[in-house]
Length: 359
Image 1 (tube, one colour):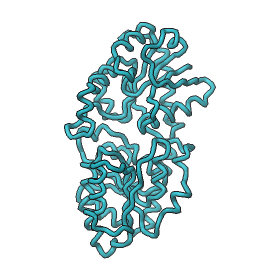
Image 2: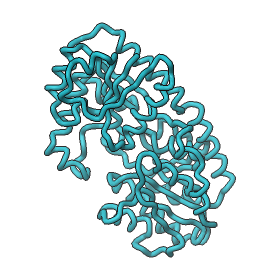
Image 3: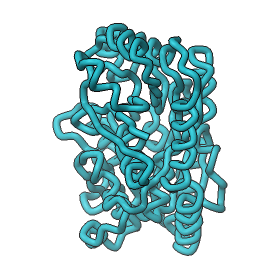
Image 4: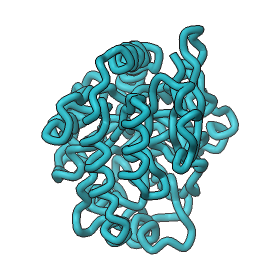
């Protein structure tokens, strides 16, 4: 089985988890041979004849010539799977909205979903979003490759911890409305006699000079009113190293506001922190409700419960240990890359062996 995976030169977190790592593991199998290409526009038919299947994230043409490339691929008769990890409909306040509209990105993704022989997504909710465009949609959930360096304990990072209980969050520039959920709780932690001076807040993924990240920092420091010893930030890292920041965390915060956009996300952040043996508090919202078991593998919180749940984990080290161990075991058993890759390989075989339809 010869597979061509199409991904950008600069690997994003999405392509890391959905293409590069899963296919790297599949490539270890004798029956699988995977080649990576960054751009497949303007290549001769003979190039594609060597492959049984093409897999790409969101769109096949990274140059924007979707119709031209699809016409060629359909003429050749090579099946294509499009992988999509979240919605293509951005809210009006999304940082990428203007660029998204100018480049007609949503229309390009929609066209690719319609043309694909099959579509892979992360959750059932996202599958329901895709199904009006393509009935051959399959849930291949996110998973962790525990053999990757960043998902092994990083001793150097652990040595950077202080005697405080380390409470961390990690993410991107698109999460302001989620972090607002934590603002009141951070103020309460600062003044509560049972928690003050016992914790340190960690903001991971920081981008120097970015106005949104300064907004994040303002939330974490309660308007820069906590001591320097109780706050630190970790600058953004690439897709191959960012999870090492979790070795700083004792407690991981995963707030999520319930919105149509957020309901199309996956449980990845919880899986990542679980793989690093972090005890987590998550919003009691989809998609985390897929795997979150309150008081068993995490604590869940609505908007008014964050302070209560954070305080509980600060003051109860035995609970932190129990939750982190339980979540780690669950991720290791049910959300590891080897198990999920069996689903992926089965789908690839089905698509390759199916009668080709020029959709």
